[in-house]
Length: 123
Image (cartoon, rainbow, N blue to C red):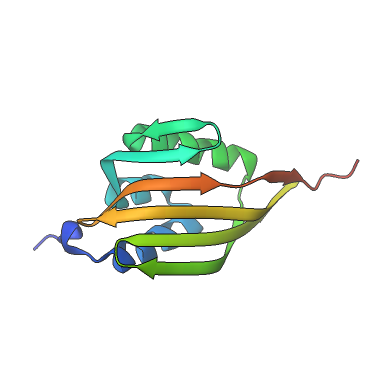
């Protein structure tokens, strides 16, 4: 019997999102956890649907190749979730990552993303 992804709680969706993201399994995460109509607000603008999420994941991969993510604060309350994070990669780091989420019916339906990439390359 196939797994009913749409009956998962917000906490279950969020936990799986974090696990798959840490494992750099972005395509699987987007397919399983993001609504086809999700809206993502990010410093570069408004991104819609899975295509928008894929574009943002590609940029993050370019900015932090092979990034090692640390989740410093994880909060879930009802349909809302919040994440503070840091990341280290060759030549770059993030110390101020902060994302918020709205999760409904087993999908992430809205997300905000903020982070600043800092160079760690020697000058």
